[in-house]
Image 1 (cartoon, rainbow, N blue to C red):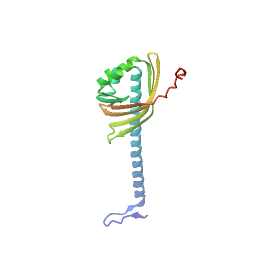
Image 2 (tube, helix red, strand yellow; image 1 turned 60 degrees about the vertical axis):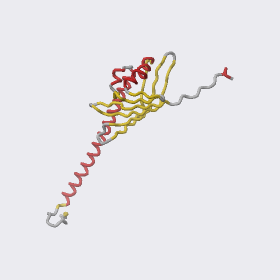
Image 3 (cartoon, helix red, strand yellow; image 1 turned 135 degrees about the vertical axis):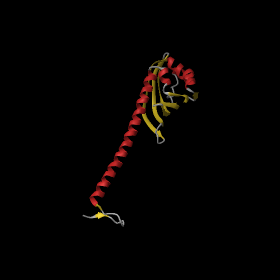
Image 4 (spheres, one colour; image 1 turned 120 degrees about the horizontal axis):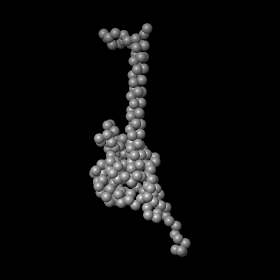
Length: 179
């Protein structure tokens, strides 16, 4: 049976051993690639579940639970304004907004998670958001784009930075009385 030697002083290796070794290396490489894909899918699923839990806390208007999703020194860019830190955001923006909302329904679609670094302990998440609620006598149906920068620490994801951009509202038609 033909084999492969070629190196002086080393025994000849039978071809079937080389073929088995090549097959095992190929299977190992495939399994490593698959485990990387599974790790990515599991991490994306974990972030997706985290985002759903965030929506549930928002929809419940639970500021205590919402606080657990944010780093204390978070920065929030929303509506052309800036909030620096969770306390500022809670006291001067989110808290007063939630207090006025009746039955809020926040949801996200087209969620895309992009992990940063080899340790995958940071990511940015881009999505489309939609918020439906009632504030006083007005029905609100707002939507737009959101980017979250999140970091994993202590076993949980936390928001380091959030930037939302609402869609332009359609221009209202002039009232007939204006003509």
